Image: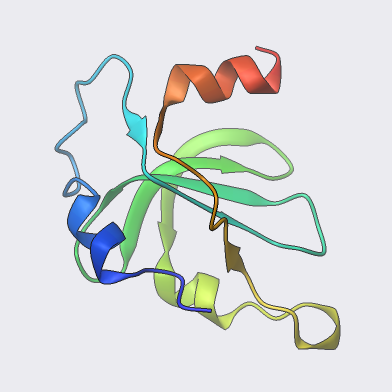
Amino acid sequence: MQLLTKEIKERLPKLYETEHAKDPVVQVKFFTPWTFWTWYATEFDGEDLFFGLVDGFEREWGYFSLAELEAIRGPGGLRIERDLYFQPVAASQLAEAFGR
């Protein structure tokens, strides 16, 4: 599976574009099918670096790398996947879904 399509890449704001937005829009969701880790991207540098919400051991905003997501391998060679049915959503709506 291609983690980042041309369409999604063009839709993602550049890094720091939504820095002062009160409620940035999450554009794409990546997840591990074998664990609970999920990455929600709101910005992209156009090459490798995302900014967004990372939900793993903790839930926090930060940077993550496309190359690192592509390099991760799980049991039986499983890879990080992109949620094909995810629709862009305001970050506050994710917080509601998390129960916060």
